[in-house]
Length: 405
Length: 222
Image (cartoon, rainbow over all chains, first blue to last red; front, side, top):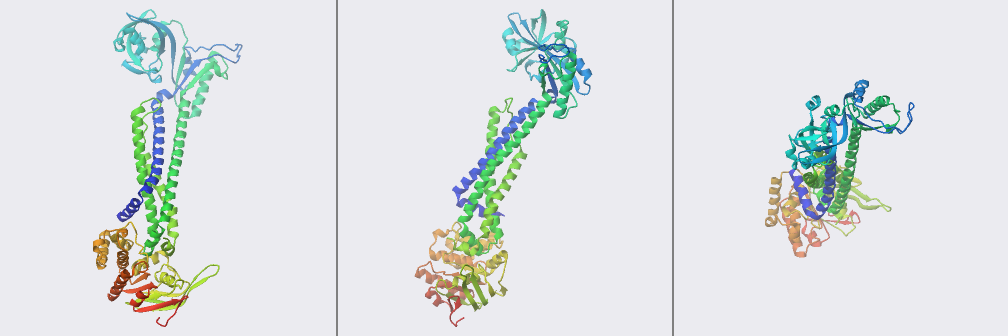
């Protein structure tokens, strides 16, 4: 075995430039494969981090405008969802609805001792923190005791907090005035995603008197597995709302929907297609490298016909010639393939450090199992690349090979 | 050592070429024989058959008690390796291997360990007076030195017979004499040697000359 390596080393060293050029095409193929796989992994990681059970088992509804006349109503009627829809949905769809929530959006003036701001508010349940991916800077989000006790607390966006108190952190624990009442600031959040301020849903409902209207209904689903389940659930919920608000269940614009369950399954599927596509592209790139190796091995065998003849004359069995050519091909592919893997990993590390923390691209890495799969693919490829030239090499008769100068 | 009985060889083609016609030949152990003939006479074909590099159509070839006929590639490779030492006109050394590695190569195919094959190869190089050139590449050696390295390679497996194909064809007259002298010395040590040549000087230095004319053995010496 050691002798075989020595032989290979000697012939490869003997043709440095050729070895390097061949090797480069393989290294490049593997490099591309690794980088593509890593990038696909980065996209997938970002998606998986965004989607937890809490944020994907959910369908949201917003009222729209009817386009079909129904039960004596003309079209063009605005549908506004109601507080009571939450209980109605739960009651009519047991086994589908785990829980129902709602949000109300509004605008109010909020003031501290020094400033007043007219800004947006959202009355929410604690889940909104996960759904809206709220990044808390100081304090906490709306919690269940705020809901149960109708507490007058607020979570401000940092821009508002700065405007009202000069410094976002200073807002914490302070009192602000809004809707004629005093509210305690329990948290400040940041980020570019939405700039509303949050208050407990129940507190808002109590303060707004008999106003029953909600901006958004959020239905938390249970027991769903497939995309079809998700679509069926959406239909059932839509039917309930259509009955309650007397619009046609066929009327798509009467009710706006965001089915996070089915869309997450669809995204998951498209991620799989992405991964497959990446493998295909990567393998094809690699294949061109492999064809290069095979080609070079043909040249190498041709060039060494005389040498092979000498070896045959002094007693090399066809098998040992075969082994040597194939081993040489495997050596070139795995050696440079390994270099390609290392280079690809290094680039992914750099990408990770540079942009690995963004929302759509997260930790683009390939794990050891993929690296292993790629290595195995390499060895197989190397064997195939060497096989045909090797078979050609042993077909030549020693006498003819010796005559070849 | 070598016995040919009614051996025939024809190269197929539009006009088949009958190169060896009913060859009968015996070479005994310890002989130093030369085969001479014009080019195209069939002497190279005969040497290739003797060297198990080529096959023949009919007749029998016995080498050291083994019938060499219709052998598989592996078997003929093994027999070449163990029973025959080749010396070629153009030396046929592997250019990127040094003298020692070239001499040791046949032992590599016997699966001899590196340490042992280098020791045996060194022994043969010493015998050829080339111990100090062991780590030189063929390109750094003179013609005579190259041919002596090739002879060392032929000897390293301790074969039954040495087959030399125009061993002096690429050498000047002085070096030719040297190489011929090497063969004589080996023969004195008991080695059976067959030399194909058209150099009368070399032929004269052998104990017996076999002349081949048009695929037949010409003189009664055989």
